Length: 222
Image 1 (cartoon, rainbow, N blue to C red):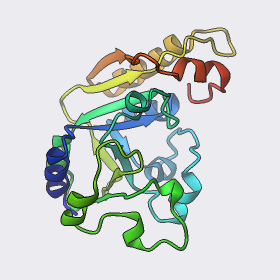
Image 2: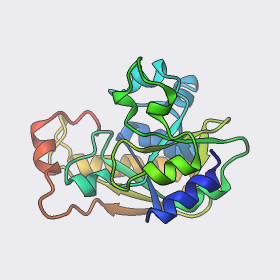
Image 3: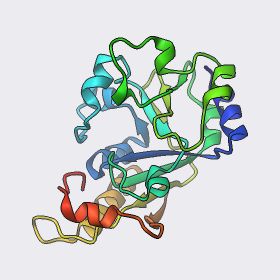
């Protein structure tokens, strides 16, 4: 599908923003590249990135070179940490109207982590604008907007990019505050590329479980 077609369906569904969550290490690489990049692009160019539990399936099913975005803020809606990472990039959905030449856009019906060998292509992605219009549901965490861009990068452009960073309220192994350490790394990466950013500590909703989840789990994504 074309970006303009996907954009029109998303807007009719009430989606105005696209979200991309990642680890601090990978996010620093994105900032230094000046845009979102596919994991395949990062690997091919030896860019630092943190392993994700979906990597093996992304390679297996031919989407390793896709850039993933979500039409919903998973952290906000689920009131839990986003397990792809504590850094949330947010772009206006209008970015779909000005994609690089020859970009191919697909929207998944379910999370590729749940794809099976027995699936048909129609089990995995919407085949047409009409099918997406009928089947896309705002808030379905498995319905990702995937961009296959020939260069492997979706530039941030000249408008400052919105970044929200989780504050786990814990210290790293070297006794530094995890939030402050991550913020410094991200800010340094942005300055190196001269990327404009709109910065905010992630504003958790009442009942959000992310802090307790960070306290009981590893901090490898910081």
